[in-house]
Length: 109
Image 1 (cartoon, rainbow, N blue to C red):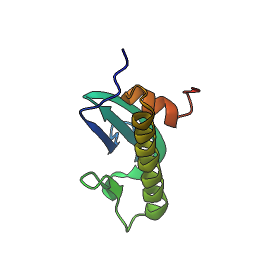
Image 2: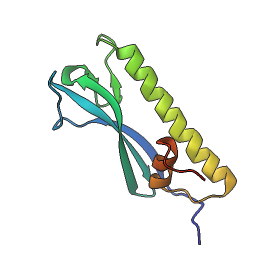
Image 3: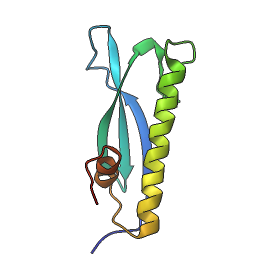
């Protein structure tokens, strides 16, 4: 039986500080959590550690490309929320993995 009702849902952006590139920037990852189950994927965006505000999950305004990266993160957050709402409204199974697959283009249903 498909589970269509969720108890919890969250979206988090975080920096993977152990995977810095040659310019000493770390990648920003997206974590989707539905009922305690996580799915993570890279945003393919990198930021300097001093420019990342973990509390607000955004690039600080003074950083180079802050507006572009923050706009991109907002767009992804909106896409995740829209996918979640669509699955709920259509009565389909809602899992973190399913949302990840849909927004990354791997779900063809």
